[in-house]
Structures are given as structure tokens and as C-alpha cells.
Image 1 (cartoon, rainbow over the protein chains, first blue to last red):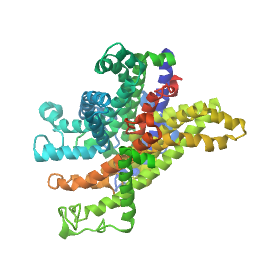
Image 2: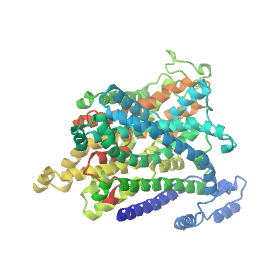
Image 3: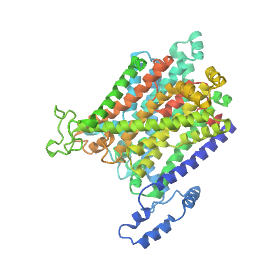
Image 4: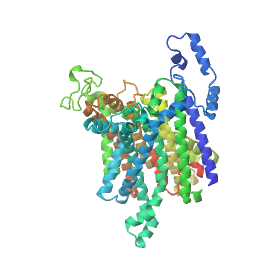
Length: 316
Length: 301
């Protein structure tokens, strides 16, 4: 187990380093000269040269990369070239919108998708199981932003129950309105995440149903349902844990889109805007931080998986 | 193909992908109107015989735009699949048949690449280089290619234990001949299923990126249409129906096609279905195949 954790930790660190290199190189591809953007159209070539020197843009690539990584190791993820604020402080502010959104939608999708997935799996030959499965297949095919648009039309435009987008300027100082404006986005994200999750739970349940221990349980007199609940679900829960880890990455990508649909001032919106504004250092820091979050969650999920499943430990 | 047609997911998948193909081809030679022609006299026309999907705020015919968008969607899907297939097969087969040291290094490389949050990197990549059909396909193709590589590696390792490989080797078949004549045909069904799911992923990703406005205005795209139409969502919500349905139909088509192929080649799976995304299905493959234990990849071997 210790050996596994150490090796997995090594993989995590390696993945973070590779990600940082990829992010760094990707952003060197950005067309446009940052120094010119900051200097504005009025700047003389000498001024631009001075800005370039100040930002270290005249250094060789390797040197620039090492400077950047060195800063990160001291907790300095960089400063926005445009407004001078640190990446971490701005990200912290935006997370007050994005983090509740991600957490609520994840919890919501689990609450809805896990029971429905079990039903779909256990009753896979009945009409209700088949229709649940068909609905999830459809749910997977609906793009997140279109689902959001439909919800806007129904709940905001037609019925006027909820705001169609935006976030109160006061933020969480006005908790009622803040929460209200996150309902539709959270539900939208939960729908698309839940559809995928449902399919997984169904597949895991089906797998379990064909196992010998279920047959043994049936043989000693348990009903199908009892056998599934007492022996099956415990086993079916294992693959579901790994899926949740994988889903975090797609959830974060979904957030970028959903924040645009509902015009929420979160991390995703900030990222898209910064890319447009060529705020290199900030985009670099933001993307790396997001990537690290995804990688660390993946690591934790893998280790958790080992902890709860003794078979994997034996196999290793 | 006949076997795929037998199951209802396969049948629906073939029909939907067929419609997508037909729309893309037809749009090359004919659309009811010029998809880009602005006509101020025809703004916000409802559904009618002359405009089956209606028109948008500039008087552009929506059906023509949807048909033209099919071209972009199909191009991205095909390019992504092609790229993913090349990367996945090359890395996967190499890592399985190379000498132990090389093979395991490639396997570890695959693990690291899979761990990278592809969708986020794709966003930055597309934003940096400008989102053309090429850059979008490149970003999604590379990301799903490494995931495919892991599936291929597991499949090839399974095939390698079969007697016919031993027979081929002992009758003097060269490594490349064995790979081409015996390994590739035997892993093909699995790979085709994965590629079909990757195509669905590509359709959704293209829609999302163009919705965000990261692809050029000149490229017709369903995602961009939906992005533009959202500005007037309170007044003309109906215009969003058909472009949205187009994305759903294309994605559903590729996903169901994958399910159909899977059921056709593996009757044991009858009654269950493939999963939505190649990322997830690779995990599921491992779950379904007890021989492949490391859910997290090579680190646990």
C-alpha cells in the first residue's frame, strides 16, 4: 500500500511537471506581443523594449520557465499584467461563484443519478429500466449549453421563477439572490454530469448482478432485491468512486461553458476573458492551478479506491 | 454492418450518422438559400414551407445554416477520429509489443498524458492558435488518442496470449506481418467502438468551443449559431430548437453507432450499452475485464 501511494505520488508530481511545461509552451504560441498590449498603441519602440525587459520576455525560454516555476514553488502564481493583482487573490474571489456551483451540481448529480442508475441496472429488461437508460443516453448527447438555454427559456423566460443569468454585485452578502442565481446553472451541470454517472452506475450494477456471490445469496434464499442491496451495491460502489474522479475534469471544462450561458463572474469566464486579453501570466497561473486541482483529486480518488477495495491491494 | 443494423441502438445510430453525412454532402452542392445571405425583409420568419427551420435576426435561413454546419461537425469528427486512431494504435501497439523496458516507458508516458486535463488544455490551445477545424480536431484528437492508446495496449496484451499468435510466430511470420494480419483485425472491433465514441465527443467539443466564440465567424457551426441566438433568447427562443437538435442528433448518432457495433461484435453485452465518453469507457473496459486490474494505470503494476 505504501509502495503504491509513493509510486502514485510520483506519477502525480510527474504529471504536474509535464502539465506545467505544456501550459507554458502552449501560451508561447499565443499570437500577439504582450509588451505591445501593455504599452498600448502610443508606446514608442523603446518603451515597449523596456516593458519587455521588465517582464523578462527577452530572456531565453528555459530561463523564463524556471523563473515561473520558481515563483510557484514559493506560492507565487504570478501577477496579472493588466491590473497588477495576484492570480491567487483573483482566483479566490472568482471561486466564491465557481466552487459552490461545482459542489452543488456534483452532489445533486450523485443524489439523482445513483438511485436511478441502480434501478436502470436492476430492472434492465423492464420498461422503466430501459426508458431510464434511453433518457440518460439522450442526456449525454445534449450539449451543456443547450440544456442551459432550455432551462432559461422554461424557468426564466416563460415562468419567470428564476433569474436567467448574472450574479448579484454584492455576492454572498445577499445570500438569497446569490443562491437563486446559481440554481439553474447547478441544475444544468448536474443534468449533464448525472446522465453520464447514471450510465456508469447502471453498468456497474449490471456487472455485479452476474457475479457468483449474488447467485450464492439468491441460493440461500434472498430475493433479487435483497441480494442486490446487501451484497451487490457495496461492490458496485467501487467503480463509481473512480468515475467521480474522472468526472471532475470534465466538470471544470463544463463550468467554463455554463458560466458563459448564465453570465456568471466565475473562474471560467475570467479564463476566457484573460485569454482574449492576452494576459499571459495570469492565464498560465490559472490554468496550472486548475490542472493541479484536477490532478490532485485524481490522485486522492485512486488512493481512496485502494483503501476501500482490498482486492486491488492484493493484486498489486 | 448488417449485424449492427439488427439492434435498435445500432439501427438508430446508422440512420442518424447517415443523415449527418447526407446533410454535409448535400450542403456542398445545394442549400435552400445561401447560408450567409443577409435579408432584412426576412427577419425572424417562423417555420414555413419557404423556411422550414425559420430565419434568424439577420434574415438568414436557419435550415441552410444547419446544413452548412453539418459539414464542419463532420469534418471535425472525422479528423479527430483519424488522429486519435493513428496516435492510439501506434502508441498502444508499440507499448504492448516492444521489449519490456521500452514498452513500460511508453505505458508510463501514456499514463502521464492521460492524467493531463485535456479539455482545459484544449481550450487554451484553441484559444491560442485560433479555433479552426484543424486546431479543434488536433486538440481533441491528441487527448482522446492517448486514452485510446491505453485501451489498445490492454487489448493487444490480451491478443498476444492467444495461441494463433504463437502459431504465426512459429511459422515464421515477421513481427509486422503478425501485427497487421493477426493483431489489428482482432482488436479492430474494440477500436471501432472507441472511435465512434470519440467522434461523439468531438461533436460536443466543437459545439462548445464555437459556442464560446473561439472558432472563426466564417466557419458555419451549430455551436456558434446557438451562441449568437442566445442574445435574443427572451424574444425568439424557437430559433434555438433546430440547431440544438442537430447537435443532439449527431452526438446521439455516433454514441448509438458505437453501442450497436459493440453489441454486434459481443453478444454477451446484449442488453447493456457502451458508455458515453472514451475516457469513461476505458475505465469501464477495465472494470468489465478482470484481467486488467490497474484502474489507475501502470503505477500499480
